[in-house]
Length: 350
Image 1 (cartoon, one colour):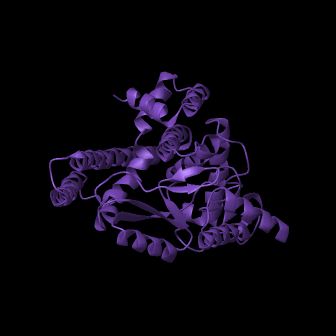
Image 2 (cartoon, rainbow, N blue to C red):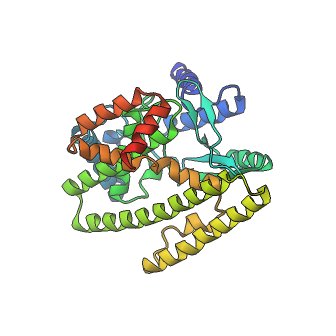
Image 3 (cartoon, helix red, strand yellow):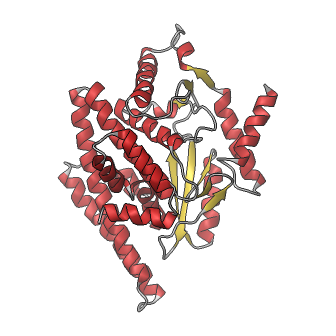
């Protein structure tokens, strides 16, 4: 057992979760992953236990069906990911830190062996994330800490289902599993926006297909409503992002004037959200996001997952909604340089 733990720790150290040269980060990442391993048990065995609650039994049964659907209908990796379960005893698994300069929308990058550079850095301890955020703010960065319920190890390990994922609706859980398995199917080093947009596109495509086959009428109607609200929210965020880009690129105004314009832009975003919220009959689902500081890094955390989603969906429909052909086209893009890859994706939505 100890040899296996050491193996896992070393692989983890040199692949997914650790930043080169930072021993403290090594330690928290390895300890966090080992905690997951220590609490993991096969879903099939758990379902046989007489003490399991009726709710958990139904949720685990749903996951087995979702996992089968992912492989058979979405052509996602057929492995042992999400065939085990781990109760972490908390509602958030880890915390990711995003950062940008105060007058720029270019994300700070953290680089890792094998997987390349990412636009965020994750911690299993919230206090560690807060500590890094404090250091970055002292360096005049805009900073945002995002709660993360789960993540993908890109196939290095069999990612388990976590209790943090069972707080959602069935279709949200299904979409999350499709998203994370999409990372295992295709991942490109040094291109966070491409990776997250691709996985989000598969999440949306997969959820719509799953609901059509297994969703209740109530779930389908609720999902459509959620998607309409999310679309409106994303339009607000994207519009603000573009406004800020224009402000930061201006050469004929001072830094102070840019800072004033930045503040006014975020105030306008808050105002527009209140109008949007009224059109939703005061639906408060986005209140938490708007209740804390709005800044460049917070916008980035949204844009990172959405930027090329429309392009991927167009490509999917160009391939007659046939996923094997769609995946082939995505793999062609993956072989291009980052610049050329982004250029082709942007061309699809222009």
